[in-house]
Length: 615
Image (tube, rainbow, N blue to C red; front, side, top):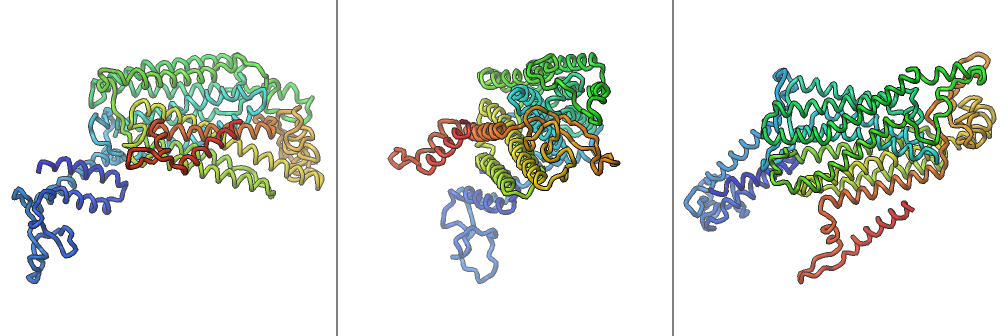
């Protein structure tokens, strides 16, 4: 039975690919493997039932069974094939149970049997089978903070949708999204290579989430992030620096006590520290120093206090929560902290791309310099990340005030359908098995997959924001029309009034967006007394700017263009451009190719839609 190891491997691979349908798959695979065992047997000696199928019992069930219906099974070499088959089945079952036990070790670590400390253990070795580990609930909890981060990024993007601020907004958007994605991906690649089953590392992850939450908490609209009198930039950069220190600690630990292929672990960890984590920490430290100095020089107090005390008399009962001058068109030293974060992200992305696509593939000692990742785990986690970004688009669509007009429901319905189609396009184009995925194909394709996924994520965030802006615009116009028709303040008090819309007096009489003279949102304050329900006092809130219909439409077209292009680029990473072009032709028996008109039509449709949106 020299073929048994190969057949066992075939069985195990098929069992893993069954994705939970173990009973059904086991039967099919066992029958197929049995056919391989008996492939060279003499047909006259095979054991059939009345349906000409292999039977599981070689002995007659009754004396009435004729020899023509039930024959003993013997292999051509004289070995009892049924005995060999039973041994093969037992081997595969035992191997499967052992592999399940390895995965269950991580679950047992959550109980009382977990040690206080255990060194990280290499999860995957070169040449070993890829077994998808159980997804840790801590990973899903970690992802929840990125839902809030994406939502806050959407608010920042809205606050920069003016001709003067859009470039500031792009830099801040990249400077915030990029470092946060680096933090998420660094956790992914660590867990794809190593496993930890002790309380110490669980505590480290708790601290890591705490540092991440500090950064997410301080993602605010542009006027707050760019003002030295606000602590938002300082808090965001400080959270990034502390989280990066966690990464440096974990890599240093691997160098000292990591178990597995010690040489590869040390070489890989040292290189990661030198070329990625330490440079990032230096950039973040510089950003923290600049933000801290600027915040300290401003007095360390909120800018709202000084402004409110100074201008209280001039503005009556109005309370401004954002001071004047924060919408300056030019760059200042206050923009440097987030600009440094953006530079760090671009530098790290560019160098990593160059290293993985040019330098490492030509390394002579590749396996001594790198630790393999569990590809199935990476695919699963990247899929969860994509769902997070799609979730942000759904939140932006559905967490908006409603109004009973046709345009509102039409735009909302189209937005939901578009998100559903994007989700379907992405996951339908993703390979169902790791063998066909870009991460398995080669290192270059895997790195490009990560880059295009980041581009897709930024496009999805902006896409959700564009719909939010359009829906809010429709809502404000409808409410303004209602108030203008019935007089008085309507639902929003006297600041909404007959002319000004939701943004109140600072926007003039433009029905919601104003004439551009004001930039602060007005929200009435419940104070009772002579002012009625909403009184006379008003709060001027930061975070709202004049957003024209043209700006909203431009953001929608740009974000959807980026999303569609990213989806196509992600698809190309799995097979390569050449093979995808070959899909346009149907191979004939004579070796020639015939155009597949349906594929060509769909391709032209996607190209035409992308060009239309881009222009």
